[in-house]
Every structure is written in C-alpha cells, then in structure tokens.
Length: 384
Ligand code: KIV
Ligand code: ZN
Image (cartoon, rainbow, N blue to C red; front, top):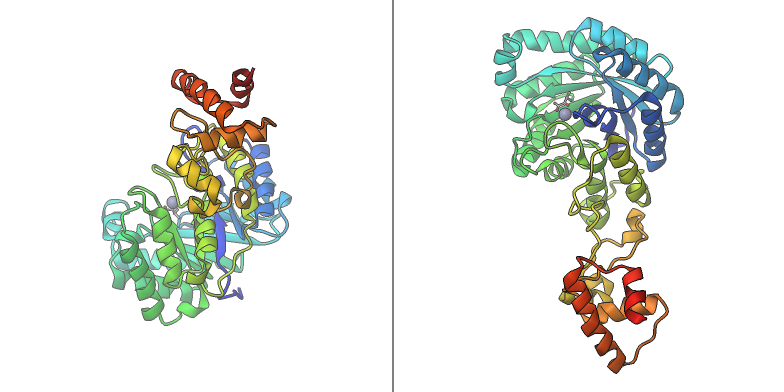
C-alpha cells in the first residue's frame, strides 16, 4: 500500500474498542448510521468489529462494508487461522478491506497470557500476517501490550511482520502504562532500528488508564507515527482510548508543531457526532471533557466572563464554531458580573442604562443564589 508520509491517518475504533464497553452495544443499523457520519467526518479507517467474536459483530462488519465507499473498513482478529478466515469472509463486500491481526508482545503477555516463548510468538505473528495477506493486500499487525514490551524484541517482531507483508504496524499501549516521552521514544527507536520500517505506517493505539492517551498519541506522531487509533468521546476499554476530537484539535491549534502534516478531519462535525455517539451508546460525556464536554466552551466566573466579552481570545483557544457548537458561551450563575448579564439582556433585546442594570443585577444575584443557573425564561421574568 502506498502511503502519504505527510498525511496523518485517522483510524476510528469507536465501533470496535469503543463498542466493547459494557452498556455501549449498538445494533447493526445504529453502527451503519455512525459509520456514515464517520465517513463524512473524514476518518481514513473505520474498525468495524471483531467478526469471530459473535454473529452480530460479523454481520455489522458485512453491513458496514456495504454501506461505506471511500473509507477503509477494518476487521480485528487474533493471530490464528480461523479468526482471519472469518474476518476475510465478513469483509467480502468491502471496497477497501483491511485485516487487523496481532498477538501479545510483552513478556507478561507471552508468559501469562499465552504460556509461550518469544520465539514461538514471533512465528505465530509472522504466520498470521502471511495468512491475512493471502486474503487482502492491506494488513495491520498489532503488538499487544507493546507499551511494556522489551524494545529490542518489539523491534524484531515489527521487522518480521513487515517482512511478512504488514502494511501498518500498531504499537498499542494496551494498558495505558507509558509516559509520553517513553512512548515517543519507543516509536523513535522503531523508526531508527527496524530496517524495513519505511515499508509500513507506524500506528499509535493508546489507552487512558493514567489519563495520558492523547498526550501519548501526540508524542507518537511527533516521533514518526503516521496513524492514530482513536474513538469519539474517547470511549473504550476501561478508562477509554485516545479521543479523536482531542488529537484533531491539537493538530489544528498547534499546526506549526506538525509542519506539512495533514488530516481529512472536518472538526465542525465534532459536536454533532459526539452527541450522537453519546446518545446511541447511552454513555454520557463528562461536562468538563475537552472539546465536546458541555462546559468546554462555557465561561462561568465573573472575571473570565468579563475578559471574554472584552476579547474572546482572552479565554478561548478554539472557536466553538470550529467544533460545530452554536449555543451560548456565557453561563449566568451567581458568580457572573454585570457585563455578562448585560450581554445576555442585549441578546434578548433589552437595552438598559447603568442605573437600571444595577437594579436588575441585584435582583439577578438573589435569583441566581436560589437557582443554579439562569436561563432566558428567568431573564424575561426578571425584566417583568
Ligand atoms: O488495546 C489493544 O491492544 C487493542 C488491540 C486489540 C489493538 O485494542
Ligand atoms: Zn485497545
């Protein structure tokens, strides 16, 4: 597969790593609806499921393959023949199929998960990639628990699977263990020590157990990874995966740190898709979640509101409209000042002189102390 070294490939796993979270299961039509939105959002790859895991997952991969035209549809497998055969069958309608196969790479997994040896695991990894390659050109290999794997062994594994035909090598920090500089150094080491690394894309797949998934993914990109695996709202196993919207906005806000690097993401869809995924999966987004949380663009303290009203950029590094948010930005609470109250009254068509504003402000504070926040209806009542 020819890849563009200046493109950051966005691999969305909302419908696989995200959907495996208890309570987040979706029906196939729901997955198709989300997949179509993901295509519009501009992701490059959709991981559609783990076909061998259940008939429902198999069917979802079949239907997503039919429904999506331009995006690569990827199916997950373990490193065994049957998983790969089933995945290839599920992908038969995909215009651009990818098989994502892999096996543990840390000594912890090799010993306590597979009861095996490094050499045996290496052979299984190579055999799995060769078998997947007999079905599809585009084969991604994941070295599970790479975050805790021995670096020299990981490099041998990566070199061997690229030799066997892997087009993408995924270096998952499965347990969210690494610090950003450790994870970045791991990617750099692979770039510098794996002879055939230029024949594959390095992919970052980070979990958020220490709240570092996004930081680790960004460190990976800074050190040569060109694919990031992520989910909408950062949902995923345990504490979740890297959040797609965070990575995309970091790339936008700090574009100068990523010279020449592009992605196809249309950030204006973030609010819409975040809300849809949250509602369909019955998984609320924490209010202070970066980019898509309810409070991510809500200014509530008097000092911030005053500064914001004087000049938005005093307290905004992203314009809400750039993530598709159109609602009010200033929340009226008992901490709000006169400036914020005046802003909302004028929005509702009330022009007050200084004296009247002072009177209304006193009444507003009494109301705001009794109520958590004040809406437009309350303001009309106050003015009456
Ligand atoms: O976290 C992980 O290691 C995974 C692999 C299956 C890619 O999700
Ligand atoms: Zn994962």
